[in-house]
Image (cartoon, one colour):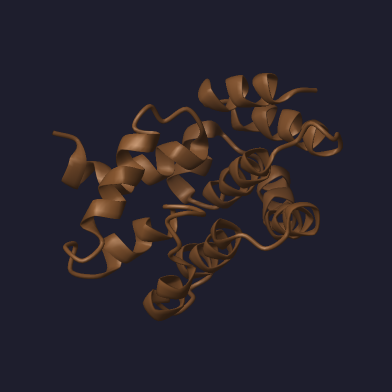
Length: 164
């Protein structure tokens, strides 16, 4: 399996097929950090009721997604070392899908633009929408095409401010 197949299925918005392709890819040396992050975001998004219903996701898939979400991020960390976006997705998932507390202060520590702009998504939306505007806009411009579930989720949250 290669990144192109997994990414193409993700771009086609076929979460079941994309998840299987990413899982196969992660067992190879060809997997990139982005592949791990894309799969983790796909699994996280699978817990959104609207996403679940739209895609007709089975209870079994959602349970698998819940289990594998944390495992995928742990596997990525073992393979690539710590990365701010991995930590971000853990906290964000807990906040959005697990009833976790807001995490602005923690997210500020994760906000390292040289590593990832993704933490700025939450900082921009959760604060006054001015302090982190430049980074959030850079992130939006970078993912504007929305090729993966991860990018589409980010775009959906930032589009009200930057789509013009």
